[in-house]
Image (tube, rainbow, N blue to C red):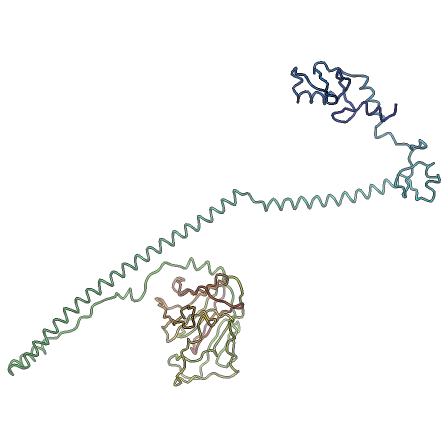
Length: 482
């Protein structure tokens, strides 16, 4: 009987390993004690139920299994013959395999190495080949371990990206709650301010009604007094003298009613928006000045933050004329994103500032001095500062007149006069390119909103815009840290 057939007979059909403490069934098949016991427990045979042979499906009882010692002895001998310590021999000559043929890629004995079959082949001692292969395997193993480490690192990174869903939901709820609370606060403040405005409106209307009644009474009194005097004039001379004496001794003055309170005329209190302005200041950027024209009347500071107009004539008031010579752009240009900058206009009685989008080229002047003749009848200074022409700006003229062009789908935009309770010394400009918004804030008055342009039709390039007019005080760009 060959070694292979014997090994097959002593192999467990369940675990496919050599039998260990074999138990035989009535059908003659044998299994490892652990394997057949586990099989019987799965089928319930160990509790008295009838089982089936895993090989031939014949019925058996668990209590009727018999130990097979002869088979165990054979399995032991086969296991000993298969021990790793036992060296393989050449199948042809029965000798030890001491050499290795590189061409055929197999171990051979000394007789095979000298045979015609392997003549001319590269033959090496098996120990040398084993050592070389071990070194190659070690190098391959080292490389594989490095790759395994990288895989582990990437696995850790992937775990970080798979953030727990419940935590993300918690963050989402926290964010929504915060914004809902902010909306509630804004809605509450809006109601309070509108309620105060309605109360002031009622007071003004009540004052107007009282004033109307007072004027009516005084008007009637005046009519009666005029009628009496006219009758006395055409009376006797003595009566006329008495009337004159009465007029000289009596003084009558028209009483002007107080229609609107000074407080309502001067200012209307709004919520402090300085905290909200901090959101825009988070987008604050460092803007530098870049003159469009080179004229001797304009000087730019060394840090490119301040522009001043140098006058060659005595200045008593600001007259409208073509101020395109004073065009100043920011050195930065934008085509996306959100930006915020602040401008100091302290002391100035005229200026224009905001955003210019390069829809058309700015008019450039020659390199010369700029001279102003107040006797010339110039065109309206705001004629070109329209949103349709690429300007989203506000301006001051004549010290207290704040102007802005109304947004319009046509070219007939109207100039609006802005109500400014507190004259701004510092103005914040906020540009949201994607939302197409340009907003102006009175930083001096707690960051209150001056004016907001919506649906701005920007071109691809947008710049900060400044125009100092012919006013001796400078325009200064505030650094982000201020």
